[in-house]
Length: 121
Image 1: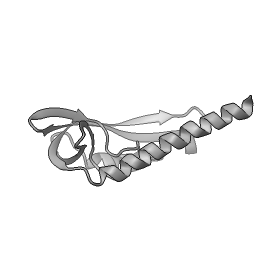
Image 2: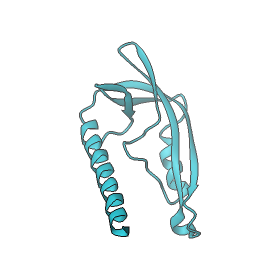
Image 3: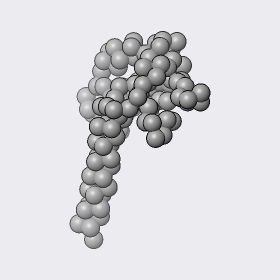
């Protein structure tokens, strides 16, 4: 029974990875519009493993607005997959690129314009 559960978990991980990879590839061809950063901050997460060298990650959390065909959307993704940095300084370097009020290029899925990223691929 344990082998079946492990196999099922591995299958779910493989399918999720394949889907993310497909979205990353597709996003390279998405059209772009100008958007604006509404908010940006750093979030610290800890996986609870009690090893500060590997358990702590810093993520840039942001929100941006953009308009497609007259309809306003908001997004939160920089990339298809969520990035995390081991050092707060690395996250701050990324955060500096996305100051609230700054103009950015937003890439959106033409089939689902509510799906967007700031950095395709």
